[in-house]
Length: 118
Length: 114
Image (cartoon, each protein chain N blue to C red):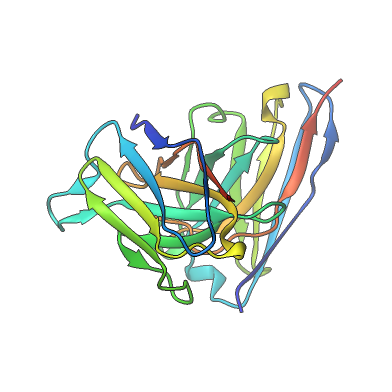
């Protein structure tokens, strides 16, 4: 069974940094492309970014609102996906999900909450 | 960027009746080289992550009940729940992945029991 478990969320001040993790199991993580998607409270879904598998180049792509501030990385030896967030803004407050990525997003974690507030 | 819109914003349907949700993209998501519509549907129940229901506009994900079906092509798509069950109360989102890696979601349609 595919499992994705996010962690690392919390309260951070505007301008601060936070690193989210997503522990994966139940599938061959090193072959998977992975996405981060966020959802502000009571709002819709917003794609944040994606990382390809290393065999497919390991490249990353980001949505415009986070480009240059967020970095997605992966540690295939630990079956873990990361989202490093810098220069956080109040509008980054959301529940952050990791998801497997085959163009569409087949499997999702339960999410970790990031709150950016002074 | 492709903008996705959904209608209605919400609907209430009696148990056992049909629910129909519409999704429209600002430009075609039909890729001519493979004749596939790059459109997915997700279900999100309260307090839960989204769940993939349909991809390629009409292919049902494994384990999804056959009362869920997707149709449409180009810019206009429909998700139909043929006989609404209590467990189908949720928000439903469409997503285009034509402009992958950038994907955009519709704003969601809330489905309730009448």
